[in-house]
Image 1 (cartoon, rainbow, N blue to C red):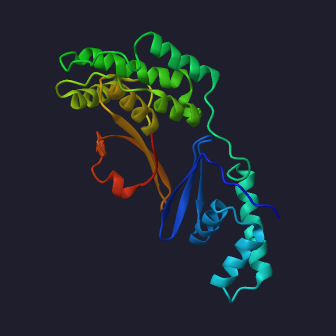
Image 2 (image 1 turned 45 degrees about the vertical axis):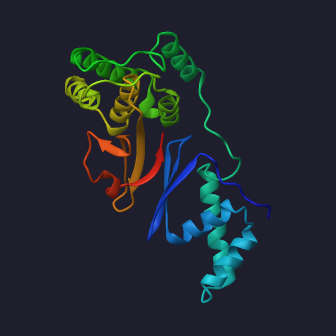
Image 3 (image 1 turned 120 degrees about the horizontal axis):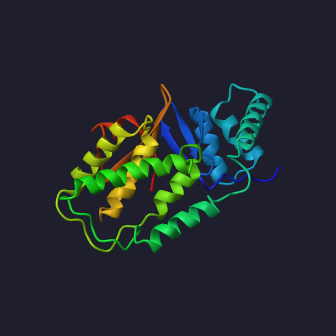
Length: 244
């Protein structure tokens, strides 16, 4: 059998007892055992089915080779069915997303705007409320790839932020979430917080992680590697998939 190729858009968060995969292109999560992790690493080394089976037979000598081969084949088929294995598809920016980023650039919303001063909390609140609405309007909640690529494409302006802008932005987002007519989930909140902070000249990142038992995915915003507007132990509770 020819070598398999893992998707370049898949991220792995591993523990001692297993791992969780996240496909940034699809927004699909997939749990694995410790054996699955070993197979995944062998796949990344472009090992064939026979090579993977040989390696596992060395580790599990008490199990017949035929059974191991059947289990590995079934596991690979599952990965392929979920599009986690096969052609290495890179996340592609949709036409709508390209237009959104271009619109923001033309209107000095990305990369060129001066820092927002902390003396304008109402302005920040309106920005945050508009951001929450735009997230729903463009259906980022049902298109993880677009949300991810949008955050990646949102640049920090050359000028630096002034004052206690991080706290002001967090307060504005919190108030906006209270007044927003729909429940705001973590991805929506972190996308808006990260982009608003970058608009204000802060090099913020959106982090995404998962815990395996019980399974739960979460997104939050970090500044200088420190979670903001979030539980302090979030980095301990959740294994990091990706930062963007």
